[in-house]
Amino acid sequence: MNPQLVIIPTYNEKENVAEMIKTVMALPLSFDLLFVDDGSPDGTAQIIQDHATQFPGRIHLIQRTGKLGLGTAYITGFKWAIEKGYDYICEMDCDFSHNPQDLPRLVKACQEGADMSVGSRYTKGGGVENWPWNRRWMSKGAGVYVNVVLGLGVKDATAGFVCFQRKVLETIDLNNIQFIGYAFQIEMKYKTKKSGFSISEVPILFKDRILGQSKMSLNIFNEAFIGVLKMRIG
Image (cartoon, rainbow, N blue to C red; front, top):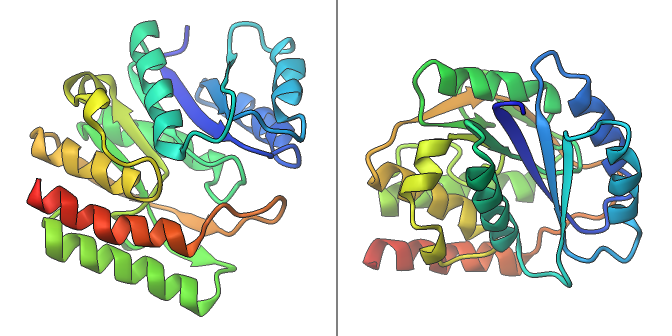
């Protein structure tokens, strides 16, 4: 078994999932893949199963019955990863907005001492491509808001491209994570910091998806706004 695992939640990603598998399997640092599929009606799970036979023991699939939320998908994956004994547990999107070629850099940051590494758009050397101005504004504004309210000290507080050392996920009470949408990413960083672990930011170039449909919505941002206040009060 590889010490590195990548967890990827999926819902209707048939345009991207085969290429994602091919790309991750070809990386110079070996990773296993765990997909958590929320009952995609477009056949995403079948594509994963078909490709899994080409890489025995390296591609895994958890199928759920419906859209249960990003946070619960990751928590399901985290618990599975802990049970299987992976040392470095990464999370990323399936749409190539997160470049799989950056995965080894995230793991390296943890190997060199970080307890959690964050693929950061807003640290020196990072950036965003193909985003309209209003989405850039919302994303940067959210980061400022999170740091003012929570004192997180992470420039890309909402980032969903991260790597954890296993001990972090073993320490955090995963059953007590409150949020399942956009605020989930903030909450995991906040819980990591509150538990005394270190967070390192690794610059990445974030590219908006080319194929498939974005799951982002104003409701997701609203959840994050209220969620941050709840985290601070709690």
